[in-house]
Length: 184
Image 1 (cartoon, rainbow, N blue to C red):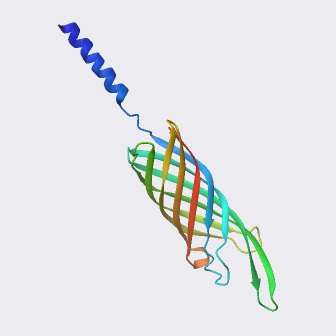
Image 2 (image 1 turned 90 degrees about the horizontal axis):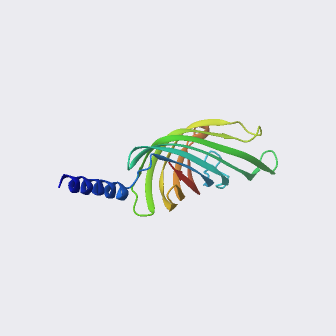
Image 3 (image 1 turned 60 degrees about the horizontal axis):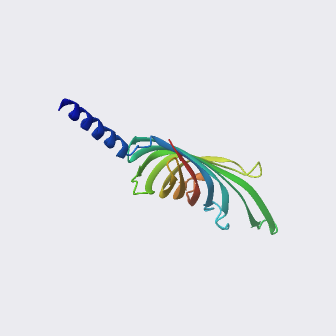
């Protein structure tokens, strides 16, 4: 009887372990990023579209809460007319970098994991010497979803509202990203 009980308990334990889901302790994301940037400091400019990259590292504090470090770089050019003393077309090529930190909340539902995040940090803008550079406080509020392809690999689609204050003027940018997620 004792032998049958031990075998039954061992089978129950093995079956329980086999059906348990293994939680990830974090993930790394890297991919393409598009940013529709505000040029509110110069009212006569349109909103430039910047192309670039985004990467993030998330460490899980709990199964549904993580801390994220997010780094991105966007590049592009903008042509505008300078009116004084006579109209001249000027093309400015520039870059914007953002380093942000904050919490992310995610809830896995089958192969899809939707998430929301709020991050704070710094942003830097420059133009390769043609105009002054500037660094400002930045915030990002957004979210997205991961679609798991197989256990350690997923595809991410993400959107963030990014606020910066370059040259003491507020900018409101939309950042859209997509890429690969490696879970560990």
